[in-house]
Image (cartoon, rainbow, N blue to C red; front, side, top):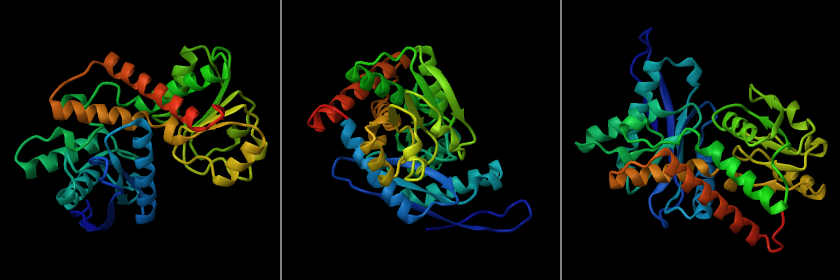
Length: 319
């Protein structure tokens, strides 16, 4: 779809291209993030929508996968321009979304503010407040406690479950985290509280040298394709936990498997975000409000159960 934005401050009008892909409606409404990035494309959205379907299936959520976004450089847009962009995007996709059809969520360069714009625009057309049209909203607008830290805490709960299976103690383990955004920063802080030692971090997220630092647990929590066939042989770690989407290429996966380094896949490790998004959606549909402790307890149980299912599906019960 082409989005014609209102005039910029200099009076110029710029056109942007936006997408929304729904992978499958078999399991229920579709669910997926909305991003603002220069690389947004139909192919990328389709792949990520399918990816989300797998995550939801693994966690037992009643959603199919979806993904969307607008191709732009958000760093070159003002707050007002981004608001107009999000409202126009919401208006364009309004006929194909809904709380029982397709539910949006934050992604790259979007957050609570952008989700509130989409909710407001959709609610205006519906004639009433529809908080369950998106997740990742401010709590005051129907969001849920624990959403901002959900993906990072999901990674932490997965690490704890995997280490329990491997009969490792988390306390004292050396950890490297690539990327200190919403995921990596939460992972680093939570692991330190649990006794782990953070021996390497990297931000900005383009830095890859840190991946080769000696550690027990490596958490790539930045961008996709960070561990490749060029550096997989140089990794000095005992376990890789994918905090980002697709940080390890298929070629790197093969190399790591040959070296005996287990990789906890992203569809498990970073699925905490969509899990708590489901909790937010459920609260909106039922007009309920859960406490932060209740959300955290539910998330921990969900991640533990999902990890057990992955281990059982492996056949040997090993990575």
